[in-house]
Length: 75
Image (cartoon, rainbow, N blue to C red; front, side):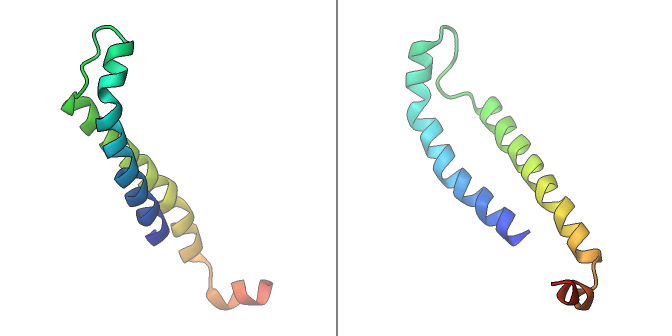
């Protein structure tokens, strides 16, 4: 899960400023789209956080069920 949180943090650190910077460009290209919609930005952040957490949690739970000694002997 540490790797998932690190990757999410990097993605948000790059994605949020990029979205803010490119918001006016998108608004200029599409009619009726506001450049900074906090409701949609918040919804996107919550959705991406939830999907990332579930995607990392499933393999982490599976790995936690395996006995470390058996995993080392397998290799």
